[in-house]
Each structure stands twice: as C-alpha cells, then as structure tokens.
Length: 308
Length: 260
Image 1 (cartoon, helix red, strand yellow):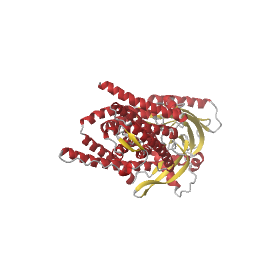
Image 2 (cartoon, chains in turn purple, red):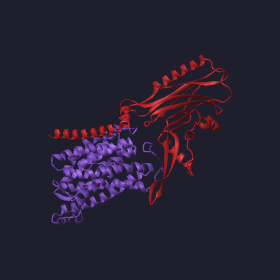
Image 3 (tube, chains in turn blue, green):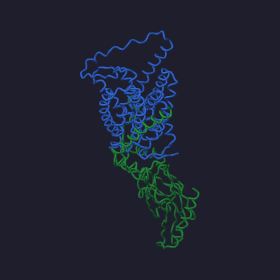
Image 4 (spheres, one colour):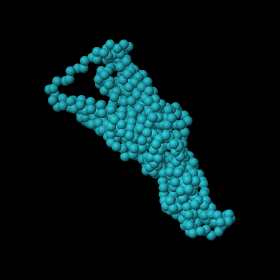
C-alpha cells in the first residue's frame, strides 16, 4: 500500500515503513538501545530526504523512550536528580546542535558531518563494546578467572566544585561532568538524529561511575526531553518533521520492541552485547565505505528547504 | 486506462467537430486541445499520475506544403532555484567542494514529440520557445569555469528520477488532424501550476501554440498537515510530540495488559 508523506513529499510503501520500524523496534527491545543510529541511515536508504529523516527519527525516539522509561519507573531504576542535571546540559547541547546543523546545511557539508559523526562514534563504541563483551564471555566460560580490579575513583573529578548528592545512584560528585556529558550527547542527538543512548550509557558507567542498574532508565528519561526538544526545534526551524512517517515508524517500533524484549530475555547477556557490537561495526563500515569509495554520481542537488 | 483512452478519443473527435464547425483564419492551422484532468489532487494514497493530452488541428484550407504536421507537448512544473554541488577527494574521503547556483530550473519537465526532436523543431525555434530540457533551465554565470558540467549534472540527475523526460515519438498524430499523448507524473511532485504547451510544427517551424495550466495541490489530510507544519510550526511540533508520548505510553500500557 503506497502512502504519500505530506512533509517528505514522497510516496512510499506503508508496510515497508511499518516493517522498518518493527525491525528497529526488535533490535532496540533486544539490546536496550533507542535504535536511532539504525533508523536514520535506513530512512536515507529508502529515499526520505536527509533533513526529514533526521528530524522525524527524533520524534520516533520520544515514543520508544517513553515506552521504555515507564517500565524503569516501575522498577525504581531512574535517578531523577541525575536525569535533570544531564538534561540541563542536554538542552544547551541540542540548541547548539540545531544551529550547527543549519549552518553546515548552508555550506553543503551537513551530509559529510553526519556521516563522519556516525563513522567515528559507531566505530569507537562498537570496538570498545566488542572488546569488553568478548572479555566478559571468556570470563563466563572460565569462572575461576579473577574479576577485574574495581575502578579507582577519578581523582581530578573529586576536586571539582559544585558537588551534589545523587541518592538513587549513591554518588556525591560535582555537577560539572554530568552537565558536560549531557551537553555533548544533546549536540550529537540534534546533528545525528539519534537519542544518544549509545554514547550516554558508557559515559554514565565509566565516566560518572553510576551503578549499571539505574543507567538505562536514567538515560531514557533524559533522552525523552532532549529528543522532544530536538523535534520541536526541527519543526519550527526547518519544517522537517513528518507526522505520518513518524506515526508509521512508532507503530512498527512499539510492536517490535515488545517482541525484541522477549527474544532478549532468552539470550545470554554477553552474546547479546557481542551481537550488538558487531551490528554497530557493520553500520559503521558501510558508512565508512561510502566516504572512501568513488561515488557513482559526483554531483548532488541541494534540498531547497534547507537553503537559507 | 482503456476507458480513459476511449474517453480521450471521444473528446478528440468532439474537438475535431468543433474545429470543423467554427471558422479559422484563412490558410492558418490552430490547435484545439483538452486534458484528461482539470487538476491533480495529492491525496494520502497518491502514487504519481498520468495526464492524457489530446486535441485536433483546425484548418480552413487543405494541409499546406509537403512537410508533415508534427506535434510537441511539454508539461512544466513550478521552477525553483537549485544548488548543484560537486564532490572531490580530500584527505582520502569524498567531500563537497564546488557548488553552482542555478537560478531557475523546473521541478518537473516533460517533452513529448511525434518524431525525433531534432527533426520536428529547428534550433532557432527551440531557443525562441524554450522547448527542449536544456533550454528550459536558466543558469546565469556564477564565476565557475565549467558551469556546463553542473547544468548537465542537474539534467542527468533529474532525468534519472524521471523528473525530466524526453519522450520522442510518444505523440500519436492521426490523419494529420487528431493527436493524443499521455504524460506520466512521478509521485514526488512540487505543488503549483503545471503549464502545458502544445506546439504544431511543419518543417521544424512552429505553426501554432496552445497553453493551458493544471493546478497540482495537496488535498484533505495531506493539505491539513502540510499547512499546519508551515503556518503553525510550534503547534505542529508540540502535536507531533504529544502523539509520540501518547503512543509510547499506550503501547506499554497495552502490552502490560496483554501480559497480565
């Protein structure tokens, strides 16, 4: 069934979009990631204009994060105070990100920036995750091996001013690092059309030292607001949010997420992480290849809507 | 489609009857033409469209000269400025380096002819009436030495996506009097007035021109969403957000209910 998208101004198959949303939903349910890093490149691939793809996936991320965070509220695994601090940084980062996006769109370099961001972040995160999960899988096979030494407290972070107590996370740290992390993720969210969970989660564990059980819930909590702000800003600045497209992706996504969660429960955590890492690296490799290989068409036409 | 063709033929015959009954200037040939659609509506299930263009030639005297009658039909969408960018290899990766601004290029342009374009239209007439695709694009010097290659790239890219079409021998001419053709419009149309021109030529010279416009616009839900997004962007953004939040909440509530 073909459906005409009013903002993207293209006609696409509605079932294909539902399937796309469903596929990403399954993956996000299995791995506990938002899936923005997959849905944006997939939308480019089916012919949605890049500006619309980036803006609309931020809207889809809101829906999947709301759906996810409710379960975490039930389990009391959301650090609201930390979420608000991260959010304060996140909103500043999002505003800056939308500005950077518009400025580079005028220069014709926005595709390059988005691609470079994807290659860099997916490459680094994927490699780290793969190495870590392979180590964990090996440890699981030889239970005699000693557990890794506990991390040393970050000396320089203890010296920063503006300390605050985060009860749910059991932390007493300065607000400066979380604000910076939030800001950085907000910047990425606006430029890449992703929630940023794949950067936020490792940063919270390794940089801020938060306990793993509250990390995903807190990250989802703040992503709702950052992605929500990005949606409204893209809608007002670029008129590029497509409601119909978002609705189809959301519909497929929420169903897929429930299916994915069940699959995820049945699989071993380490194997799940290895799979996710491989998938991240696959997307990264595909995008890197596009940058390096000689393109079939050297010329491109600019989207009139992004023009100044 | 078959019914549309039949209807088209019937209308062409009616046009011919009209042409025969009303007097025309002595020795001149003029076009009487019609379109299968008054306007094109973009609805939720819009997947491109096809317009049938048909008509007849009205003449007083018998067909002059030995040159056969030829017909050229052009359909042109609204024109917009376009930026064409070219990639080049920098530090091992492909980066947009040069750009050229093309002042006005039609978002859609189709030329259908009754024979090879070079034979049915002379260069001079093409320049005067801006018939062929390269003539329909206006590019003013931008200081780039090879402007040509940017314009060519624009035509190449748009031709690949069927936004620019040259359909030679797609117009059927019968008995030197009746003609008809069908032009396929893709689904990614820009809204606006689509200008249809019909040229009659003999020996490459334009004998008569007929012009008509077909409005293309979004209707119904498509119209409402598009208008809201552009006129009340804040309301639209907040509404999108509300839908997403509700959908997320509903989904988790629904699945909790199913599971319990």
